Image (cartoon, rainbow, N blue to C red):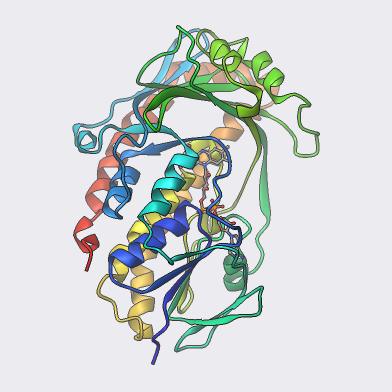
Length: 400
Ligand SMILES: Cc1cc2nc3c(=O)[nH]c(=O)nc-3n(C[C@H](O)[C@H](O)[C@H](O)COP(=O)(O)OP(=O)(O)OC[C@H]3O[C@@H](n4cnc5c(N)ncnc54)[C@H](O)[C@@H]3O)c2cc1C
């Protein structure tokens, strides 16, 4: 008979959300993190209303978590390619799209975890599903018997490899330069996330709120082969690319301190269609590593944690069949949604940045004239957001 806790591997957004969900539905939970704390990688972050709803249901303080923004896709010359009109339903969560800094999210999620749940400096090296339990092996030699293991250990997940074998990294051959500033130039726009597209570079910005301070985050995506060394001076490179864009992009980059500029080579893994086996499942990037093109990787991981709670509420973890049935329901909620987001982010990146030069005029004519972005993003996203909000059942999370 299984009596062990649920073990969540990895204290990123997905792992913290899964641990919070398990706690809220009354299952004993341990969150094992290899580093000495939940370490936020990078700077800015954008979250959508369903993610804010999930965080609030999981007990995270979401008051003034980020700056609510409207979202437009525009050409360098200001021509609008898509304008997302968020539906009235998102008003209950403060807005449709939020700009914030990643450390603020980590601070608030960790603060919501009960003392002792997050166990730092604990690296998981192996898992063995023994039928009645899962044996979790740690780098320090300790072994723990768990009723359920949730692998939220990121793009290079040990848990996913153990369950499903190795899968290759997919290089998008793009990189992103990003930064933030609270030293706002007069040209900065309030309440807006503007995704700027020209033939080869995406240069975008949004308002952020961080501990009550208003500022801006910005990001620039360009084609960049992983074999090519990174630019020697990230700030200088970003300023050069931003110069081709209209106000406020160059001003925002100029106002950013060089130490607040970051770079990532963009890569993902092809989404897998099955996440769970027996008493082990996946959440977040371990299941669906994605390009930041969709600005949704952390959001999807938090959603995974939420839905794990929704399907496992009231389930007797000693009952293996009940656990596997609940994990099937979890996959029904999440696999199709997250896989299509990963593929959309990949395709957008390739179409907007990796099309050969002779074909770009045709692509641009199509993008400008067909209204495809307005149809696919501007008109479809609001409906998808409402559908996600309706799929969520917060009632299971009132503390037992
Ligand atoms: C430039 C950039 C911009 C982005 N912007 C956005 C955005 O605007 N909005 C958004 O929603 N997403 C964004 N993302 C994506 C987002 O950052 C990731 O999808 C998200 O961090 C994934 O969360 P996770 O918890 O699944 O994995 P991770 O954040 O990778 O966390 C995994 C955790 O597991 C731990 N771990 C790994 N192996 C082990 C082990 N064996 N034992 C114990 N612990 C282990 C790691 O130390 C880590 O803490 C962006 C990503 C990038 C690169």
